[in-house]
Length: 247
Image (cartoon, rainbow, N blue to C red; front, side, top):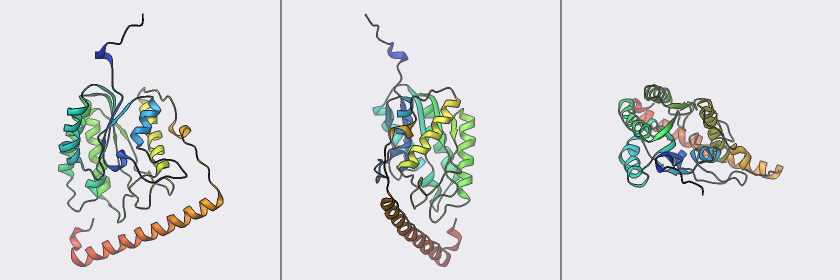
């Protein structure tokens, strides 16, 4: 007779908090569905996945809404906790590094108490249109310092960004971008002793033709132009109306 595992030894896989980047969802890319990078990490590790990420969330939203929801709905011990938050915080005009750090610390403490490992994520430096600017470096410094103090792993996405990996808003990853983030995360986790069962890139299938590439290029150019013009209009408005509010 096969003995059942001790419930005290059972872990529940991957637990994730964050915003739309971690929530996932969006349009297909060459027929590949846009799924959360954290979900791809869970699939790569062969583990179940639980997420409380919400579109548009800030670090304060994680503390006030996502942590309590997890406490109510997902009690137990996890193999890995994932926290990617701060993109919406740093793009606000009222960005407050001290307030973000306090909330970020609270989220890390929550994860550290429930997860064998915790992975925090920094943000790309070339973030947003209009660009978030130098504030992103401040955000990343807080994330890295706080993570180091808490004994948490860090996935560095400072240099992340390419046309096929980020949407034209330079914020949201494409379907391929989510996979790329996941594979970077798995490399960090492998360095800490976690075994990757399968590479997420091996789980996607797609085909392309010259016509589909041409149509995709035209769509990208059109959307990029719209984003660029909108960003220029925002910058012009604040230079005229509120010059001190520019990042």
